[in-house]
Length: 576
Image 1 (cartoon, rainbow, N blue to C red):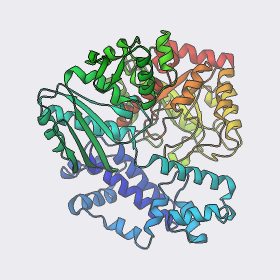
Image 2: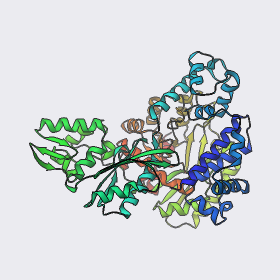
Image 3: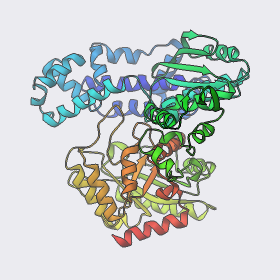
Image 4: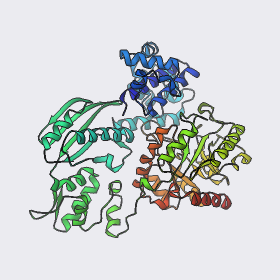
């Protein structure tokens, strides 16, 4: 994880927020937001690029942004940030962390009702004055209240990407400087929960004190909370704030039992203990015991087998019927990362991406994919470089020419087509018919008849997939005012596909709705919505969400071969 990349991304987002709070819109705001996204996606360390004078070789970083990056790296400060935030109440920035609240809303509340902080916001929401403002209304107020609830519920939880990257850094650090035989992240991260609290690291090795010492000397450590012979807790300075990491070192004979116990969930573990008790057994983090004799504990498989169950995958351990399914030998064979043959929702520099088509193709080939779909934004998404009909057709010609020279790989012609506020699609049917794959989605007027608009798109004979069906951003935006049960029913009736969007702030459909879609017979696409080469790695978050939804490779169109997929897409159009 390139920490400075994330710090600078946050700074440029803050600058853009400040400009909007002061009433500015347009190019400057968009330039800072684009710089933030580029830095977030950047795989190289921005400090290294600055040392080598290569900042301006990165698409999206011009001379002005490069100078500001250099200034911050050299001095630890950025004059532009100090300039644009001067005179803005600090509490206003805290309001921007609330789902459903953007700079324009904050400016309106501040200008009209003198809202300066969260307490002020709660007051005007509850006394009805906020609902009277132009552009607000009862529904907007309800959504902001829901956003406040989300903030209070989520606390300082991490997105999956941050949790994974931190865990990988710590695990590699421990392995490289100790005799640890096993080091693994347990807890909600291992179960693939969409957000993660404290990280739980479990290890085993012949020298526990050496492992603990290595752990507490991790370079990002800000504070050592505790350090015993087999346990330790540290606070590290992540790009997104302070994070607590806990380590426990256990004996090899109990590693499996400890891993099962600390992976959780609590409800799953309670159900296991209840089952064990009925068999006259006791199960704990130290093993499975009959009286005082340990009969299992070295591996998780041993633990489950000792109480008469097959191994239950971590993502299923939420007490949602997995134990009954295990007892009845009907656990699904969950989809795996290696089952994925394609990514079917990718943007390039032709719209708002930061990687070229050729760069995306090469990266996809390295991942072992046999095909991808390039789905640029449509014309209504002007803010995202949406393509006109003529530009899209020219893009199709370009892809056709490129496909002629590709061996054992194919680019599908696609587009992410906006569903307009009146429920229509952004391109005429003559243009849509040229595409191999049509993805429809909402990007505007979120609460204007979203259910009807999405169902209209599902019923359109040329549409294949609905992207990010709920529209939520985890901890930031509650999503459209949409009836997902109706959407799933409509997709089932029309044999259309719903997407799990793998972007870690979306994971939309979530695991609960994706499982309901599966049970209704709806096929799922797991896509990254990548805007750069590095974003293609988000697939693992979508796959983990799919696994939590009990999905198998047969439920997911990305597991189909190219020939199978093209046959399916053709059949969907014929049956519409």
